[in-house]
Length: 411
Ligand SMILES: Cc1ncc(COP(=O)(O)O)c(C=O)c1O
View 1 (cartoon, rainbow, N blue to C red):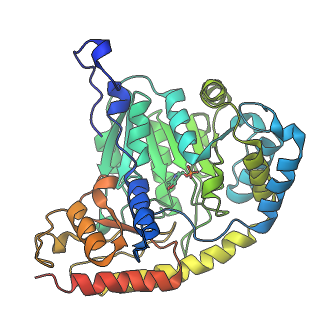
View 2 (view 1 turned 120 degrees about the vertical axis):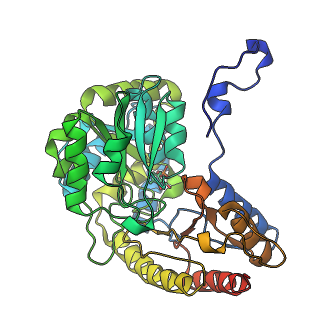
């Protein structure tokens, strides 16, 4: 990510605009693509890169899509902002799951959570508006803020606070240009889950300064142990008029490939974002929307089963990673990622190489033992690795034991 300064060359000499040219490829998708390509070439790669459940989408959801394919009404354009019945079902699901009461007219159905985030930022940011982004951050946030003309302002929290930022840190980053604070709990990449009091403290601080909050609730159902999910606009109702909620079916229903997400917000913002979408993409695929309708109108049994498996894997991966000298892995309470510090390994010799950064260490791990992990640089905090534990139990154990053997050689 670099600042998009207008170049001084003639427009005809510029092949790619400064705005889009400054955007980097998604590092997480790049690691995943590299791992999948090596695997396709017959290499026994184990990928901890992808942020997607390894389960198939539940049958009743797939069946709803099959039926939708056969119905000619779905072969046509539908309203750009989403099927009315899906918007109503999303409003009902939101009340059921987080206690947030909204109308269908406050919902925009998007092509996944990613498009929800980009369009919501595009709808509220003017050039130079600052957005406070707690780091480690999911790699897409700063890029979509910048694409929308805004300026991401990272605020770093480390493992000593469970990767949770404090109100004091947020306040220190606030300027006259601050418009929005981004909030995500459970978090990608750290798995941090903010306790209700801390959610409330952040919300009250934002409301007190008239700031907007964009809260990403895509991992709402993936919390473990004693942790609980708290929705910011429910805990701090006075924020509602300046609160944008992002969510989607990808993680809860193992539907990453179907591409359905949504934005919930004040009606004027949703109207503006819908206008944008009407020119950018029109409606999300009707078949995918029909599948999402079955998902959000159904029960939460499938995610309960996935949560059990993820919880088991979470405990295994934390234990195995902490057995490695030089790796510090706090136990995350949500999502399906661990975010260990590998700072103590940097500069050490491993198989004739001396990785100086987490990027170099991740490359070494992939080259030497064919295990794909994402370096912390992708999330704004070098010196860490992100591993997704949304992969089968056997692969998980095999992948981490390969890392254990390799990293035991560090001198
Ligand atoms: C924090 C967070 N928000 C949003 C998304 C977007 O998901 P999708 O675009 O697949 O719906 C992801 C996906 O990795 C994520 O981790």
